Amino acid sequence: MPRTPDATAGDLADQLLSLTRRLHHVHKRNLSPVGITPAQSRLLRTVARTATPPRMADIAAQLEVVPRAVTTLVDALEERGLVRRVPDVTNRRVVRIKVTEGGIAALKELRQARRSAAEAVLAPLSADQRTELSALLAQLETEHPGR
Image (cartoon, rainbow, N blue to C red; front, top):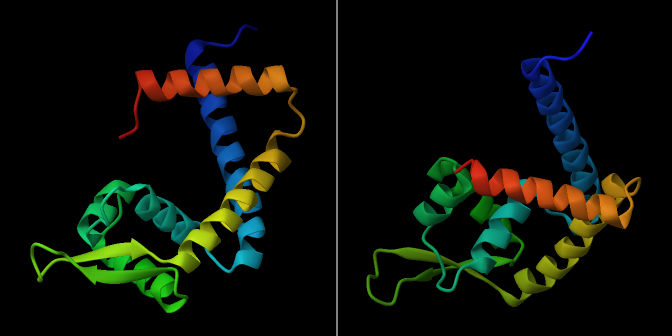
């Protein structure tokens, strides 16, 4: 019996969710030696990618989380010396988050941990298959952005 488009879409969604969970689990395991959670890693990468140190509200909007979650993540990263709070040069009431030298070093370790996690999940695929998968995922992101 042929699969209906709805059933196929449901199967694909289940496969993508399963793969995402698997990647998250492997990623978390690889981040463990670095001492950073996936959420802290994501925040650190977000802050590092901005040209100007962002405000916590900006980070919350980018990560699509509540501001309190950002505060908790920043507190943990600041305690480890990976980020620091700095006053805004134009408005002393505004606090911005800046990556420290320790944070830059941690980002290098995180990059390697993320690569290792991706490699573990993608190992069964050939180089051509990885290229094709990347193109398909990029097309989905472009045509149906989640944000």
